[in-house]
Length: 321
Image (cartoon, rainbow, N blue to C red; front, side, top):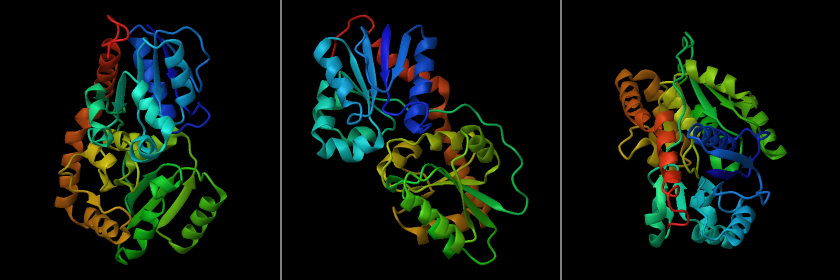
């Protein structure tokens, strides 16, 4: 099939949406499809559209639905879609109705959708190839936070948590990711000057992120809004357990019974978990065991198979709903 894959962020952004689009394009090409990845649909004849992001890709979604109303339209929903836009934005709400299939990136995503759309919805977990471990630092317990500094990620929660660690702790937290505003950059610089256990590395190449993960002890994801974070997939691929904010997007990735949750916005409880992970071998082993169990859902062959199955639903009879 000829597939138009629409992503609101191009290669230059190198963010989660772009990585997802690049990976999905590869999976679909390997299955024999012709895929054109675009920020906005160019109007060329295509058999199927797969769009990421209901609100940001709405112009392409609406144009395709008007021109080819019976051809399959697949919509993958991001965190800002699920936990904000579809509840308050008219374009995002209309995009849901226009789509023949909705894709969510973790099991709890469907909970946010109107009941009549549940039958149209499929879960496609994101993935990462295995990341070979490298020797961990000998004299530090290295913790990573990965992602651009923006409000939805609550990016300074781990920094604040370091202020509550015991004096003897060897925890060092490094944040990898660029500031998306001058205000965020200023806050990061100030935090770095006042919190000696926290370091902001800024934007780094993806290969460097993976190399740092390969020798880290732990990763923190403190988001207040998350659709299904690819950094969780990468952490599990590197055999690195995660401490995560207790919110639906993270629960859908890590499971209801995962032992590494802390309340959203609670740096004191995060500090307690960080300290336990550093000093309590049984707790760390429990985190690692649960992480390894969830890893099976997030392997590339699983993601490719689930995505291809969604597309295959329309290969025989275009326009089926």
